Image (cartoon, rainbow over all chains, first blue to last red; front, side, top):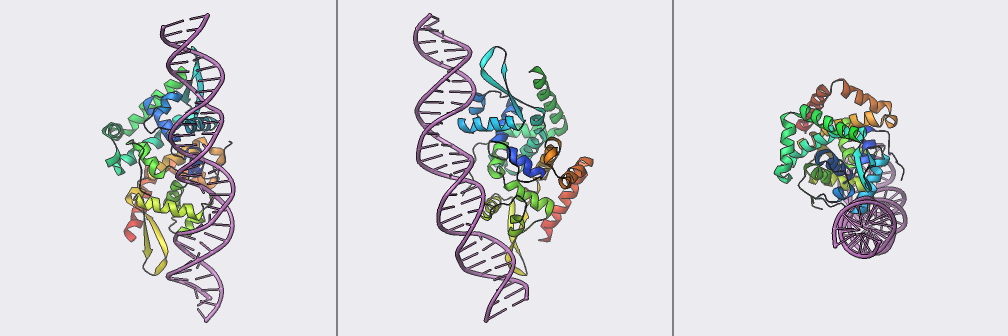
Length: 141
Length: 141
DNA sequence: TATTTTTACTTTCAAATTGCAAGCAATAAT
DNA sequence: ATTATTGCTTGCAATTTGAAAGTAAAAATA
């Protein structure tokens, strides 16, 4: 545990936090699919192992990208939500979606192509709409 | 070897290609620092091991993100260059740089902050300038 | 109230990946 | 002809991953 940066480069430092095969999928599930709980993340189609999920959630929390909370009427279920640091990863994810849409078209299902199509239609508006939605969710909690 | 996609999601599929701690650093070195050879990549300050570098270069080549060539007067030195698929990763890298600039400011050296400052001043112009430069390099070879 | 189910993990262990160091063969420079 | 450089590969120990099973606390159900 404890973050260890390889250098003082912007890209390298970001990769030290989220540069693996799972962290961004958790952010994807939170941003685009509204997932909030451990079991919701575990149910995603890429089938992350629960020990890895547990590890990545605590890494992301330690990095200040997500935070862990509870709902007032439930002492068991943890509710994970994006911090501003996590929310501002949206433009990076949008660009990755657009890259895949252009370059890996044969692997992308219609459902996912749909999201790319919406972004392509008006990227700026989509980004603003998402920011508004994600920031509202922060205020609720 | 052989690509293995976990799902048909755009983000997941991109991560299956470049979702590790080293691949994007190679793209960074090519895009922003004009690095082209094995030993130039090996000399970067994050100190990638040569076996890992070798593995990542062949993965990126297999994925069509970079290509391997030679200069006419040198039979030894391999020259790696970005394909259009690699060049179009630029906007994703730019957004990651901006994210780090905002969220990991304390880790970023003045040199790297400078790049972020240029991007912030006029992201669109910077992107166009970089595309022009990177596409010109393709034509030369 | 007692029992069952759900939730969020943790543990175990084998397999895969990583990283350090050394080695190497072909080419290029001296 | 000799030395240096380049782009790797190999060997091996350490770390990380992933599948499966186990667990403890809370919540739902009977």
